[in-house]
Amino acid sequence: MGWSTRQLAELAGTTVKAIRHYHQVSLLDEPERTSNGYKQYGTAHLIRVLQIIRMKELGVPLAQIRTMGRADEDPEAAIRVLDADLAATIERLQRIRSELALVLKFRAPIDTPTPFQPVADSLSERDRGLITVYSRIFDAYALEDFRVLLSESSENDDRFDNLPEDADDEVIEELARRLAVDIRQLQARFPWMKDSLSAAPRGKRFAEMALQTAIVELFNPAQVKALAGAFAILEEQGGADGGEDPAES
Image (tube, rainbow, N blue to C red; front, side, top):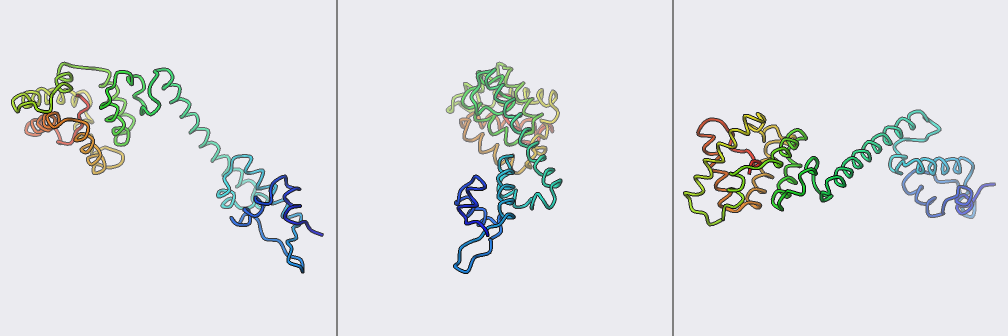
């Protein structure tokens, strides 16, 4: 004598809705039916439902339970899959906790990309936007160098920040020459900046598209012109690829 769907659910400590869902996602085999059409579950069904519930309690998603197969058929393989999944989850949570600790320590906005939390309080709105774009373009080593640069300042940084959009060509050209000198010094200090975009993890084309759009939208026309002029000077001198970023500003 078997059990009805409701009786199976009660025995397993779950709901009729859950039993029906396990059927829908192919986790639980359909039982035989009696002559009057009622489902008749047996011990094998109860064991399977209890296995599913146990794996759910251990954090295994239903979709993964289905791909793992039945735990009683290959329990060692199932445990290895589960352990690997939990290890990845623990690593992710530990990384999140470490980042939250930095956010709390430096009172940084929670959306501040790593590793810019230590300088978050000194960043302008434009800088925040720029580092957010950087975080999608450059690797961790480059981002750390940018953090160092953002913790420093120079006379030319102030000139660039205060350059009005209606600045005349003479002022823009003078600033471009100054910026070219600064960029040259940065390339000597951080050699990867000589061809930074070609080393971007997601590819040079993606980096150029994202960075060029960000520069045009975050800087005023005079600032964009000054940056373009600085890289043009460097290219004439044979020292830049013309695609670098305005980190020094």
